[in-house]
Amino acid sequence: MAASGNLSSFRLPPLPTIRELIKLFRLQAAKQLSQNFLLDLRLTDKIVRKAGNLTNAYVYEVGPGPGGITRSILNANVADLLVVEKDTRFIPGLQMLSDAAPGKLRIVHGDVLTFKIEKAFPESLKRHWEDDPPNIHIIGNLPFNVSTPLIIKWLENVSCRDGPFTYGRTQMTLTFQKEVAERLTATKGSKQRSRLSIMAQYLCSVEHIFTIPGQAFVPKPEVDVGVVHFTPLIRPKIEQPFKLVEKVVQSAFQFRRKYCHHGLGMLFPAAQRLESTGRLLQLADVDPTLRPTQLSVLHFKNLCDIYRKMCDEDPQLFAYNFREELKQSRSKNQTKDSDRESCGL
Image (cartoon, rainbow, N blue to C red):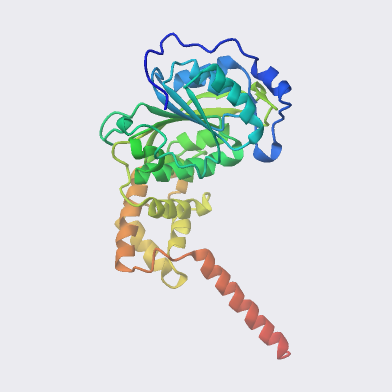
C-alpha cells in the first residue's frame, strides 16, 4: 500500500510519450474490444481535473490502456493509484509508469466487470453514507462495449452500498459514447430520455461535464465522447430494491414511442394485464397517455412503490416475465398448427 506522505512536489520523470510507447510495444487498438486511445495529455489532464482534488487521494482507474490518463492521475499527486487492465499487451507500458512512480501505482491484470475492489484500499478511508464522499475516486476511459453494462453494475452497487461503495459515496468520472452520456443526463421530455436516465438519476447526481471530439482518439471512433461525473445521493429518489426499479423502468421504456401504459402492462400476465395496469397507473397517479420520456423520477417512484405493494399481495408477480409467456404462447400455437396439419385440416 502506498504511503500518503507529502506528495505535493511529485511529478513523473521524463518518459516516452504515449505515441512512442504505442510504437515501442507495437500496440494497436483492438476493434473487437472497442478500444480507442486518448493521446492528448491536455485532455487527459482535463478529465482528471474534473474528477476533483486528487491530492493524497486513492484512485481506481479502469481500462488504463497505454496509460494516458494514468500519467495525468499520477501527476495529480495521488497517494495511491490502482489500475485494472484486461489486455496483457498494455502491462509492460504500465509497468514502466510504475517503475517511474515507486510505491504509487499498483497494476492488476483482470476484468473490471468481475474485479473485487472491496478490500483494495485501507479500511480507514471508509465513510458513513451520510458523510462527505470518501477520498477515493473511480476514473476511466471505458471501451464502448463495456461502458453500459459496467455503469449498470456500479449503479446496482450504489443501491446496495457494496463493491466500490463499501467505502461510502465514491465519486466516478467516466467516458461514454456521447449519445450514452446524453442518455445518462437526459431530463424529462428529452428525446434522449431512456432507461439509463432513470437508473442513474434516481441514485446519483449525474453531470455531463464536457465532450471530447472523436478525432482526439486513435483510432478515431465514429462518434464523439462524453465525460460524465457521478456522485451517489445520500438518499435515493426511489427507495425500492434495484432489480424491482430496473424491471419497472425497463418495462416502461419497452415501447418508448407509445403511451406508457403499453410498456407498463408487460409487468402483468395477459389474463390480468388490463385490470392490473389500470390499477397500477391509478394508484401511482400517472396519466396512462404520457409517453415514457415524459415520466419524471417521481412518477417512477410512485410506480415502483405501488408495484412493490402489488408484488407483496401476489408473491409470484415479480417473477413474471412477459417474454416467457409470449414464448410459451407461440409454442402452443405451433403445436396446434402441427396437430391440425397431421389431421389433414
